[in-house]
Length: 444
Image (tube, rainbow, N blue to C red; front, side, top):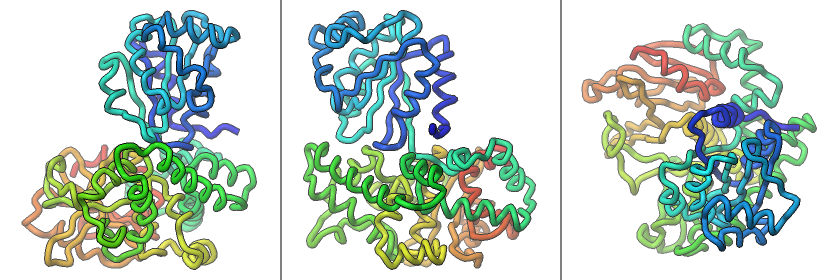
């Protein structure tokens, strides 16, 4: 069974583009990059796939230079069964983190123009700055992540018209009827427990139960840890592992700001410099930076050493929960485990998958704190994630105060229905994946 992904339509558009360039699909491991590209390859008469992690013999294909003709010749020498039909062939160079040199050839393939070329890599340990500097202007890029809630709905058999219906309620302010609310709230709870890793979601879809899903999530966690041991270079692998292992612990605290001093006894920021950044580059985590002030523009208006760390896929956080929290979540449907960390993580994930960067605000010597910020063309929009449908004091303060002229309206995400009061738009959690589309049409 193939899970429909958003990259599918992008790849079709890329193929049909008149000025098509070689494409690099990047993202964390196990998010479905190769499956999606192989599915897309069915639209070609001929497909040549090379996996540098599994087929190390092909690491010699650039020994005569990086021109397309030499590389094609060397591939066919190593494996004469591979065909190259001009104008009808897609070439996939997979797991390029094990052979980044291949990126140097993309300029030649672009100029040559006889074959369509896609490179894919997990970004684990890859020197992507080096790859970016190669073939500048002669390649395109696409960043892929695990399934978002919309893709999860597709996997469950829902069509685009259902998504449009959800969006229409957000725009009109009309509450969902109880049946509809219950259906999508339950679907969202399932998504939060599973996360968006294709292997986990597919297991759930095929079996119709959660059987084996936790084991698959825990296997992914162990795979990530093994990749840290394998690919980290230039910094202490143990320290990177310490940071990775400590994320759930710090999210469980009331103050979720990530503190290096809590990672290990005597740990200092300068000693762990690069560890968090490596996890970001590897596609494992998202960083949410603290704003100096809740004002526009956001770029440059934040403290680069003060941030929260969220797992890029909430399923990885779920897999790290202790047994008591696991039971509370699954048996009682209690999303408020780890002091609301699950709520925050899944909303952070939803925002990132829409292309937003993450920012929060905490005023010094004050209780004023705001979970996230997004923006419209004109305004800065604070986003509050509430575990209960109670008052959002900080959100109300930001909207009412004359000290924050860029803020006129806010958004509150709750376990509850659509609503509007005191310039605060309230939406159910399951609508979070539509915020960017919703904000694109508002006037504030």
